[in-house]
Image (tube, rainbow, N blue to C red; front, top):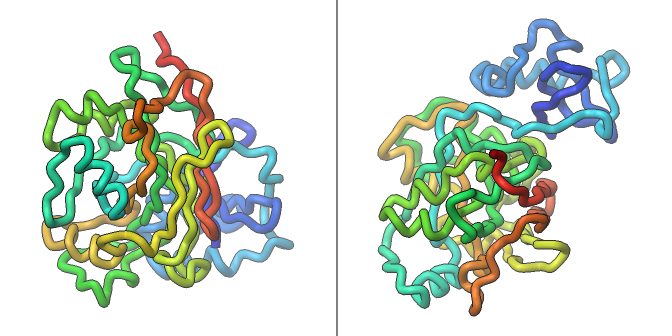
Length: 289
Protein backbone atom coordinates (compact mmCIF):
# COMPACT_ATOMS: atom_id res chain seq x y z
CA UNK A 1 0.00 0.00 0.00
CA UNK A 2 0.88 3.62 -0.38
CA UNK A 3 -0.21 5.56 2.73
CA UNK A 4 -0.46 9.35 2.79
CA UNK A 5 -1.16 12.29 5.04
CA UNK A 6 -3.06 14.89 3.06
CA UNK A 7 -5.08 18.07 3.17
CA UNK A 8 -8.30 18.50 1.21
CA UNK A 9 -11.25 20.86 1.55
CA UNK A 10 -9.87 22.51 4.66
CA UNK A 11 -9.13 19.37 6.66
CA UNK A 12 -6.17 17.07 7.24
CA UNK A 13 -6.54 13.31 7.12
CA UNK A 14 -4.74 10.08 6.25
CA UNK A 15 -5.40 7.89 3.26
CA UNK A 16 -4.23 5.19 0.91
CA UNK A 17 -3.61 5.59 -2.81
CA UNK A 18 -5.80 3.61 -5.21
CA UNK A 19 -4.83 4.52 -8.77
CA UNK A 20 -5.48 8.25 -9.15
CA UNK A 21 -7.70 8.37 -6.05
CA UNK A 22 -6.98 8.96 -2.38
CA UNK A 23 -9.13 6.89 -0.03
CA UNK A 24 -9.91 8.94 3.10
CA UNK A 25 -9.33 6.27 5.73
CA UNK A 26 -11.11 7.67 8.84
CA UNK A 27 -13.99 8.91 6.69
CA UNK A 28 -14.34 5.43 5.18
CA UNK A 29 -13.96 3.54 8.47
CA UNK A 30 -14.73 5.57 11.56
CA UNK A 31 -12.86 3.10 13.77
CA UNK A 32 -9.59 4.27 12.19
CA UNK A 33 -7.55 7.14 13.70
CA UNK A 34 -7.00 10.47 12.00
CA UNK A 35 -3.18 10.59 12.00
CA UNK A 36 -0.45 8.42 10.55
CA UNK A 37 1.35 8.18 13.87
CA UNK A 38 -1.76 6.76 15.55
CA UNK A 39 -2.26 4.35 12.66
CA UNK A 40 1.29 3.02 12.98
CA UNK A 41 0.99 2.78 16.75
CA UNK A 42 -2.14 0.65 16.26
CA UNK A 43 -0.09 -2.09 14.65
CA UNK A 44 -1.20 -4.94 12.35
CA UNK A 45 -4.85 -4.91 13.47
CA UNK A 46 -5.39 -1.39 12.18
CA UNK A 47 -3.41 -2.09 9.02
CA UNK A 48 -5.69 -5.01 8.28
CA UNK A 49 -8.69 -2.68 8.49
CA UNK A 50 -6.98 -0.30 6.07
CA UNK A 51 -6.32 -3.13 3.62
CA UNK A 52 -9.94 -4.27 3.87
CA UNK A 53 -11.43 -0.95 2.72
CA UNK A 54 -12.72 -1.38 -0.81
CA UNK A 55 -12.58 1.49 -3.27
CA UNK A 56 -16.25 1.06 -4.19
CA UNK A 57 -17.33 1.62 -0.57
CA UNK A 58 -14.84 4.35 0.31
CA UNK A 59 -14.84 8.13 0.59
CA UNK A 60 -12.33 9.26 -2.03
CA UNK A 61 -10.80 12.37 -3.56
CA UNK A 62 -8.86 12.75 -6.81
CA UNK A 63 -5.14 12.68 -6.02
CA UNK A 64 -4.76 15.83 -8.12
CA UNK A 65 -7.09 17.71 -5.74
CA UNK A 66 -5.24 17.03 -2.48
CA UNK A 67 -2.08 18.50 -0.96
CA UNK A 68 0.26 15.79 0.24
CA UNK A 69 2.04 16.41 3.53
CA UNK A 70 4.98 14.48 4.97
CA UNK A 71 3.53 10.99 5.53
CA UNK A 72 4.48 11.20 9.21
CA UNK A 73 4.31 14.93 10.02
CA UNK A 74 5.30 14.48 13.67
CA UNK A 75 7.88 11.71 14.14
CA UNK A 76 9.51 11.49 17.54
CA UNK A 77 12.92 11.07 15.88
CA UNK A 78 14.42 11.95 12.49
CA UNK A 79 17.86 10.33 12.32
CA UNK A 80 20.29 10.19 9.41
CA UNK A 81 23.47 8.27 8.73
CA UNK A 82 26.45 10.05 7.21
CA UNK A 83 28.92 8.80 4.61
CA UNK A 84 27.18 5.52 3.86
CA UNK A 85 28.19 5.23 0.19
CA UNK A 86 31.83 4.60 -0.68
CA UNK A 87 32.20 7.31 -3.33
CA UNK A 88 30.65 9.83 -0.94
CA UNK A 89 33.24 8.77 1.66
CA UNK A 90 35.95 9.59 -0.87
CA UNK A 91 34.35 13.02 -1.40
CA UNK A 92 34.45 13.60 2.35
CA UNK A 93 38.09 12.55 2.61
CA UNK A 94 39.02 14.87 -0.26
CA UNK A 95 37.36 17.71 1.66
CA UNK A 96 39.50 16.94 4.71
CA UNK A 97 36.72 15.33 6.74
CA UNK A 98 37.85 12.55 9.06
CA UNK A 99 35.88 9.38 8.35
CA UNK A 100 35.52 6.93 11.27
CA UNK A 101 35.27 3.18 10.77
CA UNK A 102 31.81 2.87 12.33
CA UNK A 103 28.32 4.10 11.54
CA UNK A 104 28.06 7.91 11.78
CA UNK A 105 24.63 9.11 12.93
CA UNK A 106 23.25 12.59 13.49
CA UNK A 107 19.92 14.05 14.46
CA UNK A 108 17.72 16.19 12.24
CA UNK A 109 15.44 18.09 14.60
CA UNK A 110 11.84 17.16 13.83
CA UNK A 111 10.98 20.84 13.34
CA UNK A 112 12.69 20.51 9.93
CA UNK A 113 10.04 18.07 8.62
CA UNK A 114 8.58 19.33 5.35
CA UNK A 115 6.09 18.14 2.77
CA UNK A 116 7.16 16.28 -0.36
CA UNK A 117 6.29 19.17 -2.68
CA UNK A 118 6.64 22.16 -0.34
CA UNK A 119 9.25 24.94 -0.70
CA UNK A 120 12.65 24.69 1.00
CA UNK A 121 14.02 27.87 2.54
CA UNK A 122 17.35 29.41 1.63
CA UNK A 123 18.54 30.52 5.09
CA UNK A 124 19.18 34.19 5.72
CA UNK A 125 22.45 33.25 7.42
CA UNK A 126 24.04 31.13 4.69
CA UNK A 127 24.32 30.57 0.95
CA UNK A 128 25.88 27.11 1.32
CA UNK A 129 22.63 25.21 0.79
CA UNK A 130 23.08 21.65 -0.45
CA UNK A 131 20.99 18.60 -1.41
CA UNK A 132 21.24 14.91 -0.46
CA UNK A 133 19.03 12.24 -2.04
CA UNK A 134 18.28 9.43 0.42
CA UNK A 135 16.06 6.41 0.93
CA UNK A 136 14.05 6.84 4.12
CA UNK A 137 12.87 4.05 6.41
CA UNK A 138 9.90 4.51 8.76
CA UNK A 139 9.75 2.36 11.89
CA UNK A 140 6.51 0.47 12.45
CA UNK A 141 6.65 -0.75 16.02
CA UNK A 142 8.33 0.07 19.31
CA UNK A 143 11.57 -1.90 19.50
CA UNK A 144 14.95 -2.20 21.17
CA UNK A 145 17.94 -4.50 20.63
CA UNK A 146 16.74 -5.61 17.20
CA UNK A 147 19.01 -8.09 15.44
CA UNK A 148 19.88 -7.73 11.77
CA UNK A 149 17.82 -10.86 11.09
CA UNK A 150 14.76 -9.32 12.78
CA UNK A 151 15.14 -5.77 11.44
CA UNK A 152 12.78 -6.12 8.47
CA UNK A 153 9.95 -6.96 10.88
CA UNK A 154 10.03 -3.50 12.50
CA UNK A 155 9.80 -1.51 9.24
CA UNK A 156 6.46 0.16 8.45
CA UNK A 157 7.61 1.29 5.03
CA UNK A 158 9.82 3.43 2.83
CA UNK A 159 9.85 7.07 1.74
CA UNK A 160 11.92 9.38 -0.46
CA UNK A 161 14.05 11.84 1.55
CA UNK A 162 16.13 14.91 0.82
CA UNK A 163 18.58 15.56 3.66
CA UNK A 164 18.89 19.27 2.88
CA UNK A 165 22.07 20.61 4.45
CA UNK A 166 23.60 23.99 5.25
CA UNK A 167 27.27 23.13 4.88
CA UNK A 168 28.96 25.95 6.81
CA UNK A 169 26.64 25.43 9.80
CA UNK A 170 27.14 21.67 9.51
CA UNK A 171 30.89 22.08 9.88
CA UNK A 172 30.60 24.25 12.99
CA UNK A 173 29.84 21.25 15.18
CA UNK A 174 31.09 17.63 15.12
CA UNK A 175 27.48 16.48 15.56
CA UNK A 176 26.43 18.15 12.27
CA UNK A 177 22.99 18.73 13.82
CA UNK A 178 22.72 22.49 13.31
CA UNK A 179 23.47 22.33 9.61
CA UNK A 180 20.93 19.55 9.15
CA UNK A 181 18.00 21.01 11.08
CA UNK A 182 16.99 24.34 9.57
CA UNK A 183 13.23 24.73 9.17
CA UNK A 184 11.87 23.07 5.98
CA UNK A 185 15.12 21.11 5.46
CA UNK A 186 13.58 17.67 5.97
CA UNK A 187 11.18 17.03 3.08
CA UNK A 188 10.09 13.43 2.64
CA UNK A 189 7.29 11.41 1.08
CA UNK A 190 5.34 11.50 -1.13
CA UNK A 191 3.81 8.51 0.63
CA UNK A 192 4.77 5.65 2.90
CA UNK A 193 5.23 2.54 0.75
CA UNK A 194 4.64 -0.61 2.79
CA UNK A 195 7.24 -3.39 2.62
CA UNK A 196 5.01 -5.74 0.61
CA UNK A 197 5.58 -3.44 -2.39
CA UNK A 198 9.38 -3.30 -1.98
CA UNK A 199 10.94 -6.69 -2.65
CA UNK A 200 14.42 -5.51 -1.63
CA UNK A 201 15.23 -2.03 -0.27
CA UNK A 202 18.82 -2.61 -1.35
CA UNK A 203 17.97 -2.92 -5.04
CA UNK A 204 16.43 0.46 -5.79
CA UNK A 205 17.72 3.09 -8.22
CA UNK A 206 17.91 6.56 -6.68
CA UNK A 207 18.48 9.90 -8.42
CA UNK A 208 18.75 13.59 -7.52
CA UNK A 209 17.94 16.09 -10.24
CA UNK A 210 18.51 19.83 -9.87
CA UNK A 211 16.66 21.85 -12.51
CA UNK A 212 16.41 18.64 -14.54
CA UNK A 213 20.15 17.88 -14.38
CA UNK A 214 21.06 14.56 -12.76
CA UNK A 215 23.51 15.31 -9.96
CA UNK A 216 23.35 12.00 -8.03
CA UNK A 217 22.51 8.47 -9.16
CA UNK A 218 23.14 5.19 -7.38
CA UNK A 219 21.71 1.81 -6.46
CA UNK A 220 20.80 1.50 -2.78
CA UNK A 221 22.68 -1.79 -2.92
CA UNK A 222 25.89 0.26 -2.75
CA UNK A 223 25.29 1.25 0.90
CA UNK A 224 28.21 0.46 3.19
CA UNK A 225 25.85 -0.38 6.06
CA UNK A 226 22.54 -1.79 4.86
CA UNK A 227 19.13 -0.96 6.33
CA UNK A 228 19.10 -3.97 8.63
CA UNK A 229 22.55 -3.15 10.02
CA UNK A 230 21.46 0.44 10.61
CA UNK A 231 18.37 -0.58 12.57
CA UNK A 232 20.35 -3.07 14.65
CA UNK A 233 23.01 -0.47 15.43
CA UNK A 234 20.58 2.28 16.43
CA UNK A 235 18.34 0.01 18.49
CA UNK A 236 21.36 -1.02 20.55
CA UNK A 237 21.42 2.55 21.84
CA UNK A 238 17.81 3.70 21.90
CA UNK A 239 14.23 2.57 21.70
CA UNK A 240 12.85 3.14 18.22
CA UNK A 241 9.22 4.23 18.08
CA UNK A 242 6.50 3.90 15.43
CA UNK A 243 6.86 6.76 12.96
CA UNK A 244 10.58 7.34 13.56
CA UNK A 245 12.33 8.23 10.29
CA UNK A 246 15.78 6.96 9.36
CA UNK A 247 17.54 8.52 6.37
CA UNK A 248 19.92 5.86 5.09
CA UNK A 249 22.67 7.93 3.48
CA UNK A 250 23.42 9.88 0.33
CA UNK A 251 25.72 8.95 -2.59
CA UNK A 252 28.42 11.02 -4.24
CA UNK A 253 27.59 14.13 -6.23
CA UNK A 254 26.51 16.57 -3.53
CA UNK A 255 26.89 20.20 -4.52
CA UNK A 256 29.61 20.98 -2.01
CA UNK A 257 31.88 18.28 -3.47
CA UNK A 258 32.04 19.89 -6.91
CA UNK A 259 35.00 22.08 -7.79
CA UNK A 260 33.98 24.83 -7.67
CA UNK A 261 31.05 24.00 -5.36
CA UNK A 262 27.58 23.93 -6.89
CA UNK A 263 25.39 25.02 -4.03
CA UNK A 264 21.69 25.69 -4.50
CA UNK A 265 20.24 29.06 -5.46
CA UNK A 266 16.81 30.58 -4.99
CA UNK A 267 14.55 29.21 -7.70
CA UNK A 268 16.36 25.88 -8.06
CA UNK A 269 14.15 22.80 -8.14
CA UNK A 270 15.31 19.62 -6.42
CA UNK A 271 13.70 16.34 -7.46
CA UNK A 272 14.55 13.05 -5.75
CA UNK A 273 13.40 9.85 -7.45
CA UNK A 274 13.56 6.30 -6.09
CA UNK A 275 12.27 3.50 -8.27
CA UNK A 276 9.36 1.72 -6.62
CA UNK A 277 8.93 4.41 -3.97
CA UNK A 278 8.14 7.60 -5.89
CA UNK A 279 9.52 11.13 -6.08
CA UNK A 280 9.52 14.38 -4.17
CA UNK A 281 10.15 17.83 -5.62
CA UNK A 282 10.97 21.03 -3.77
CA UNK A 283 11.79 24.54 -4.97
CA UNK A 284 14.27 26.74 -3.09
CA UNK A 285 12.76 30.02 -1.91
CA UNK A 286 14.02 32.87 0.24
CA UNK A 287 13.45 32.39 3.95
CA UNK A 288 10.43 34.49 4.91
CA UNK A 289 11.02 37.70 6.83
